[in-house]
Length: 251
Image (cartoon, rainbow, N blue to C red; front, side):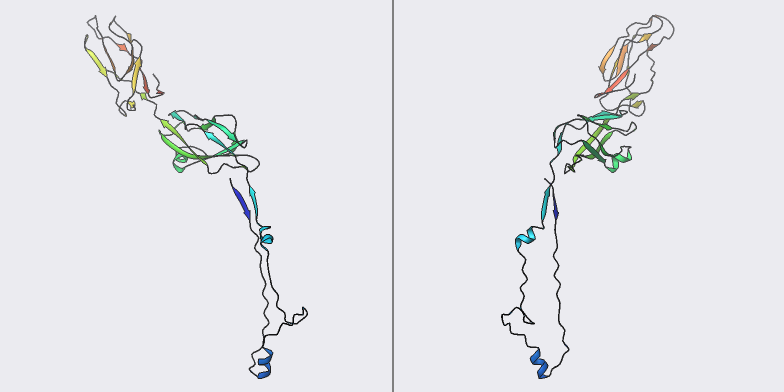
């Protein structure tokens, strides 16, 4: 719970009577402190200044702000090239109806943009993800608020993880009839090939009546054994789909 505290400072003005310095007896006698006679109309009288505790306390006001907040679900993970990410939430407190997001410098450098006072609809909160952001994890903070000045405090830490989507360039291999061929794409050399990428393909399209071509699924490379019944070179074309985790590349 947050508090706003207002404090009133009471000032005291002190007045001094300044006499010229005269060391004569008469003036020395006149400088003696007056004797309090008990009458309130004496020129010099002792005055007590007091401030009651309840008077001070009456000027210290505490205004509790209403509670508000949400329970965030797991931070989203998306594939590179994706432009939105869903951040689920539940159990809203205090009827928050707006949210704001502040990304750190790394995220801003990749194209993420801060959000200010956007409408908070039903779960999930849809986060905007730059299409060209480099794979990695990007961090920010989120707050929810209401028109009644309720603001979640402290802010919620959030993140978006972008995993690389595999993208394989066209490749060509030559093999003798009846021999097994194996093609293994290499990262950078043959495109974007994250570690652990697997490959799937239907049966190849062939010329010259070649046989032996078959489909493959979840393989760590592209392989097969083809037989060419002719005495001239023939072609088998494989259409391969790479997959890395949940990220599926183009064929």
